[in-house]
Length: 268
Image (cartoon, rainbow, N blue to C red):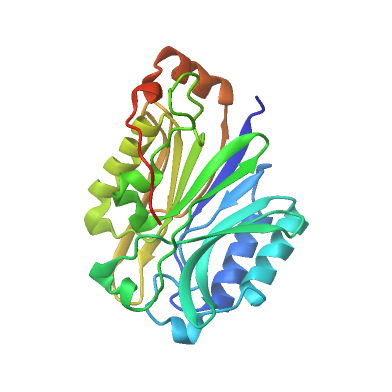
């Protein structure tokens, strides 16, 4: 039951400027003051929440993925964040889980934000990514996915529910979530932690984007009881926290709510 140290970068982003964002993020990562094992970046960290994928999409052999490989290897960390990817003539808002050895997992955003016409520019994913690190299982999702609890819900591993084994211990959301809906962001992050009896980490950007939409950050770390361990609004921040699996296991043993959950399956 090893602890896991995770850092989040809450930052302003240069609008649709890959070079400026990569340089800025590399400086923050390399000048961090604490040791860490995972660093989480916001959604679309090279561009901001752009609806111009034709101009900014890269392949999985492109500069940003190679940058992630280099940074993960040099800093001996797992690096996480979403970028605009083109694959088989389709554009994806793709989260990348990059390991220090260059291997990676990907998650394509399932719920596309129709209010901003994201669904007109990007293709939706249909498969969750639950990664592993030091024995921890981590469910990785993107921004608007937060509004859809079934997609994040612990699913049963056996029919009789005896000895229920949760699918994951940590749920991470990377986001460009506007300040005008920050109440929903903060409320739903806590709800996802409570209903899944897991740690929840929400990493959001700050500042105005190219559409003059303000983002207040409100990045958060929440424990399995829904108690807020970290919250920062409006300011840039590099925050590191050590998560203890003993605490999570104690909560699940004391309050075995998951075994009473509904039995269901998620269709693609």
